[in-house]
Length: 205
Image 1 (cartoon, rainbow, N blue to C red):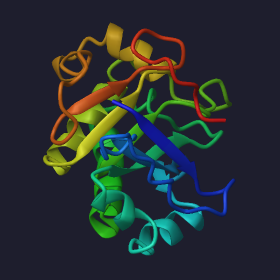
Image 2: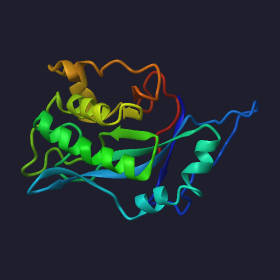
Image 3: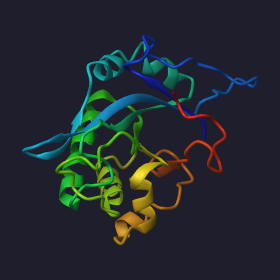
Image 4: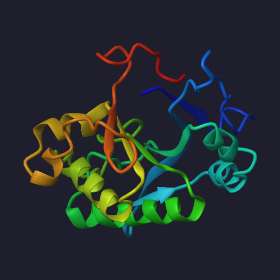
């Protein structure tokens, strides 16, 4: 699977190029809007944050996502850390992971991407007051997302403490996601990190 990401804050271009192979098939299977964020709300815990460019990108679907989708490329939203103490790897319970998943699902239903990508980078897990990293955390989140979004893509960038947690997970829900999916729609798929087996392409800048 080939994917490309488009930063909403670093580029004025809001849609990825529609590159095609010689036989006419699209080069990229998935285009990723980069990114929504996991923020820490002191009163309620982890919450979803959208910078102003994310709604702008997904609201203007006819000029951003639709041309890409019409050529056969899926369009997903990246969920990324935001230099705060909340992240994919330190949900404290299935309930907190489920509440965050509900926020993500509402955003997907509102803006209509084909799914989400989970990216465990840029969270401050060592910051003051940070909940401890929990090996079951990512599994709880993925299971809750799948319950809310049964027919959507849930991809997982194979990097960071959340990846390490999945390999050490004690709960059945977490362990069930440690094997890469064989399909994208309706399944969870792990996207290998740069330089790992199965990925010879560079990470986005």
